Image 1: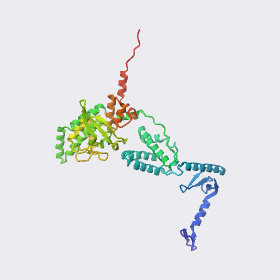
Image 2 (image 1 turned 30 degrees about the vertical axis):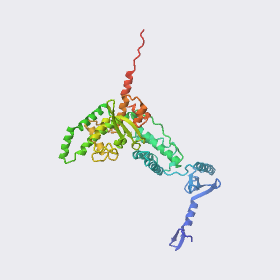
Image 3 (image 1 turned 135 degrees about the horizontal axis):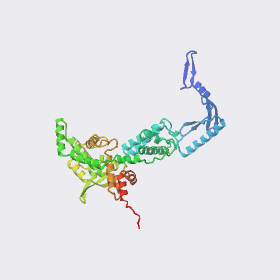
Image 4 (image 1 turned 30 degrees about the horizontal axis):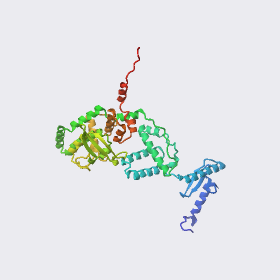
Amino acid sequence: MNRGQVLAVDFEKRELKDTQQNSDNDKQSFYRNKTKICNDAVTIFQTAKSGGIWHMRAYVGDADKYFQKSLRTKDKASAIDKATLEHAKLLVLKSEGKAIFSPTVYKAVEQYLQHRYDYEVQMDSITVGRWGTIRTHMNWFKRFVNAEYRLDNYTAKALMDYQRFRREKGAKDVTIANEQSSINHFCKWAYDEGLHNIAKYVFPKIKQRGEDRAAIRRATFTDSEYKACYEDLRTWCSKASKEKAVARLNEAALGSDERLFNRDLFRHWFLIQANTMMRNGELFGLKWKNVRTYEKHGKRLAEITVEAHTSKVRKSRVFVSRGGEHFDRLKQISKHTKKEDFVFTMDNGTHWNKHNRRALDYQFHKLMERVGIDDYKARNVSLYSLRHYGITQRLTNGVTNLTQFALDCGTSVNHITNTYYHTKIGNSEANALMMREVRADKS
């Protein structure tokens, strides 16, 4: 008896039974009409449950696995031809270093996300927030396909209905376009890694629809709304308003210093973001060492350095902004103004950031309530809208150097023209009125 052989006991006949031998016999009865082809490299066969359909099986030494596939024919001659062609394809894939076996979509996506985290987030090429957005995009991809299927089951045109699928889930075209970009980045990575043999999925082209172009306009403050906001904040942070607040807080036995300073801190965030057009993350990471104010032609300006690790595009930039007086005033009232201190630091020493922005968001929501912007949520008006407003105002007032302006904003000229030149329908009206009427010479 061989060691390790699986045995069973027949208790009626009181003897040992060789289950391994029975197993081999079962396999022989299950696989039928086995025929070796391609110099014995491939075996074609039928099974007891295949209904006469032929299959092929070939050993892939590099992977130490068998490649098996249905040939979808009951004719043996046709099966031999198809198996020979499949074997040739395997040899070509092997010679080109491409995938023969593919992981499931689920496993491939997990590998991709881990790769981007290890080599991009950890190396400060992208932010954790951006990585989280990519993960959300990939989750929608997994919901569209069957994530338990192998990645190589999906052809280049397998995602042609992705836009329809996402629209039915309420996604806007601009969101769908971003998701498709992330999905194709994953596709190219998987191709380069040899996980499948498609370099790019084919998506129908998404045209920029009017409603998407208008989305930025809806999510931007109007001139009257912006004026109402900064006038309200001036009153809200006035001495009289603070004295009333102190009285109420004292009656409730609540501390007043930190709560009142948050008013001032938020007021300065509001004004600085509108003037500098900086992104939220860039303001969260702004330190006093990154700001230098000075006066020129009777105006207070600020020279600002955005460090690469705080920028969405991971590029540092230095630009000059109006509104230097807001930095000066905040520096006078803040307790935390050393070079390494963050500009937007609360009275207790903690600074506003994406994980600690409750007080910031609270102030914004209360401001919207006080000035009566009731539809701000429906319009997607947020703190980021201050960046939109600042850019829109500069364009409306006539930026002389669009390339430099795009660099100052940390974006591209193409993005500026495609996004913000569509936000003011009044500009089109003004251009129409500037057209000089040409009258026919009556003589």
